[in-house]
Length: 235
Ligand code: URA
Image 1 (tube, rainbow, N blue to C red):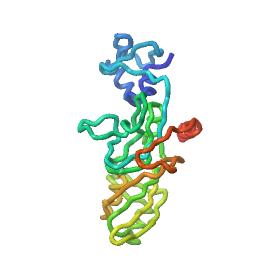
Image 2: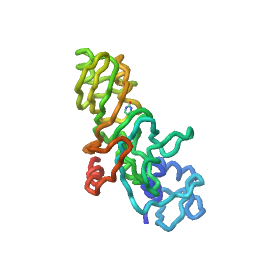
Image 3: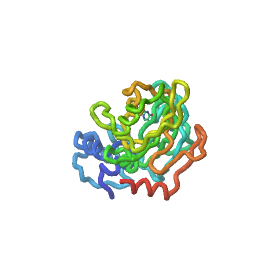
């Protein structure tokens, strides 16, 4: 027996907080009856319906690390019928990406059906270090480089890179390695855009202790139990 909001969050429908809101709004039914009580205990045999959708209880948790190609959307479905990261993985489980990479960004993305881990890693308080390689237009001046190293305000909030290095300067572009802890949408592009050096190409090389290893574009692997445990310990 588990609390209703926990079962909803753990099975990937939404976060626990949002699940509580849905319950309070009368949008959750257990075995056909609307439940308004937050602490209600349910078990796996009960039928849970949220906003008319029957919650699928995951029996088996799966975890994948994908090297996302360019031109693939980081979601489960796409109204415009573009290829999704989920469609690249051969599984019957209802998986979804942990966070997102832009359509034109390549590199490391995790997918799972474990709502508890996904919610934990995506929580704004959970600072997971991500490493990106950006090809930017032009060359960073020393003041731009050191200014960025100290931190840059993007949409009212400061981002301080945990690592910044110019790897190469070629003609009118540069290859820059940058590590950041936060996960706001398009954050790397916004950082360089604000300095007047738009990102031409972006790749995520690592997520916490996980790296792409020798996975080629479009290839993926399952995480080991040890890796999953380590991700849980990041909180
Ligand atoms: N920052 C971006 O600008 N794009 C991504 O895909 C990821 C981080």
